[in-house]
Length: 285
Image 1 (cartoon, rainbow, N blue to C red):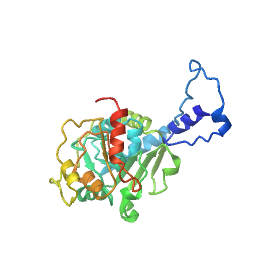
Image 2: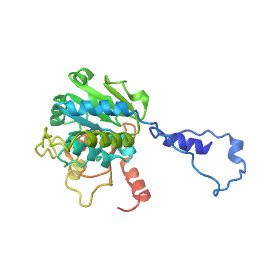
Image 3: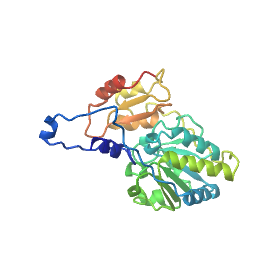
Image 4: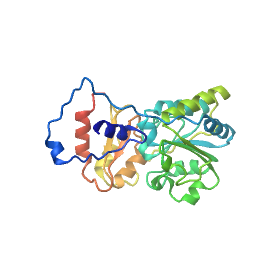
């Protein structure tokens, strides 16, 4: 049962699993030999290559395509492959809040966040000028989309997600690909290399003026907007819920951090304990 619980937690979209053990089972002595124990295999759905080809057709034909990197890219450890694919076809990259740090904030193809909470005017404008959107490992949540009629109007969507229930639920989907983000990116990269040479950048994401400290009232958040020495790729950053979370997301680029983790509204005060846990559990950089 425990092996099955770990398999369920890791398969598809990772998440928690509740194990409810009766008291007599908790108190019993159960023989266990770690030498013969092994985890259950994690299954990954086979790709539909016809849909990969169709998605590539749309990407190559579009005038103003854009990629959306969701948190599924980080969970699949596929951020490097995502950036490699974006660079090959010179596709601008928007990150959802859960994908913060998946592409360096100073990368020439990085547009930043969009949406109603952590978005920026230049990022929103860039998205609204697109004619094709490929979302990989994202859910199209309301914090990202804002008003759906504005978000979806005038553009087609390709949605890649490991969970079928997320596809087509929020935005109309031209091509739906149920797949682990890493497997899909490998197939897309192979298809792109077979079809075209590396492309030159056509739409340059805007590089906004420095918005440091704009509208920030919390002096702690204001202090954090200064460059942090030694923060590099693979690092963790933590902030609590509230206005300073929004300001930090817009104004502090997170550089090459692995993620800028934010607490949900009911977890006020969790930033410091979380940082202490991360410092204890994570290996030194």
